[in-house]
Amino acid sequence: MTLRLAFLALVAVTALSLTAPHVIPRLSVLSGLWWWPATVLSLAAAAALGLNWIRKASDKSPMQFVAAVNGTTAMKLFTTLGWLTAFLVSNEEARLEFVFGAFGVFVLYTVVIVAATVGPGDQNQKN
Image: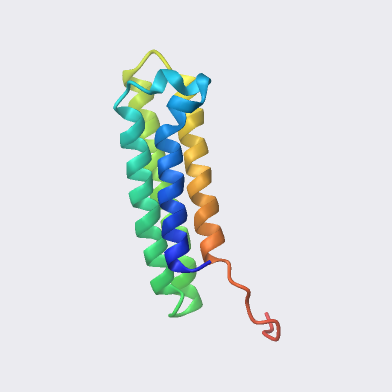
């Protein structure tokens, strides 16, 4: 997947995630909360920064590439964990919807990043 296509996929996942509470009845309770767009947009920013970091590191050493992938995963993970913790501490309603929705968004961004970083590879390269 090209870098341009990867960022287009990030934009598509962001748009789908932002509109999910208006389309999926179970998540409709999130549509009036500022928490949802804040969570989705901060995860989008973490994914975009991470994807850019991974792309830059892919031209360098394998160790830098692995560090970029792990760092991107950690950025997204701690961003999600921060939002989940803050939401669960301060809200009594819509806890399940928020937690499972945020986890779903995390997974979608992870799928985009994995698809963007997996290349065809060199068939003759030895491990």
